[in-house]
Amino acid sequence: MSAEHLDDIGARLAAARARVAAAEHDAHRAPGSARLLLATKTVPLDGVRSALLADAAARAGDPAAPAPVLVGENRVQELVAKAPHLADLAPEVHLIGPLQSNKVNQALGVAGCVETVDSVALAERLATRCAASGRVLDVLVQVNVSGEETKHGAHPDAAVRTALDVAALDGLRLRGFMTVGARSSDPARVRAGYRLLREIRDEVRDSGEPGAEGAIELSMGMSGDLELAVAEGATIVRVGSAVFGARPL
Ligand SMILES: *Cc1c(COP(=O)(O)O)cnc(C)c1O
Image 1: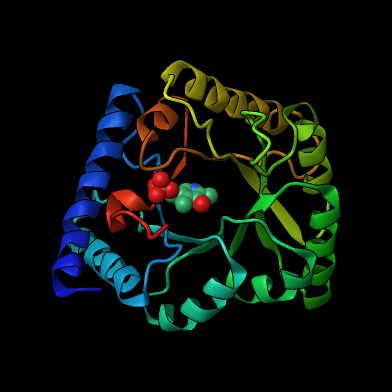
Image 2: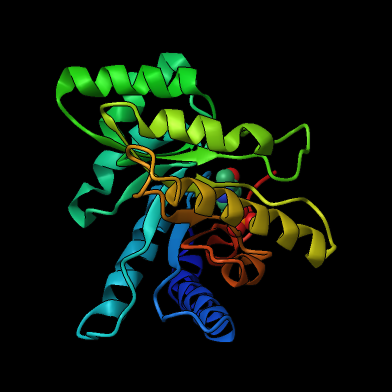
């Protein structure tokens, strides 16, 4: 990336932080209750590093600073390529794109959380590998709240059952839910999807079923609509273009 573009990243990150803070305030939520995840697909390593360094600098010496940004990648290969070069900055790394079964081992090597568990079959595959190596993996269940055919995720009607089955597996810790919002210019429609994810989360978290009480996260909202998601309770907003600029098509 050009030097100018790298310089911009710190300012854009600060602007994204300010948007999240304003949205938390408007929703009468505690400052820092929605964490920021950097969606780094197609972003070169120097861009990702600039964002993480700017984040560390902005937070240094401020006891009231929000939690460090998370890093999210869509493709396992891209994550595997970048992760070793980010290790000195120790970000919490999430997989936010679909996980094919032949990539499970690779994903486990680099991701601290898989946000895209959309079936019990995938969860069982992850759980088996985790149990074999004695580790516990954080997972979110992805739900297709909009019903758009191009989107991944469990059907909303099946999401509670899927999540409870995932929560019961050894080797996985169900931390909550993730969705990609409706592609719509109607804020009411987008918001209704985010509300639905929150209702699914509440039902699971309050179910009393084994492993369900830790399902608190709601990963929802992106550069274009994070305010709507924070208003509906997002605990993680995933931001790419607002920080890194437009992606190549
Ligand atoms: C790309 C991506 C984002 C970020 O999108 P922006 O509109 O660039 O903020 C968030 N979540 C997922 C799953 C993505 O693929």
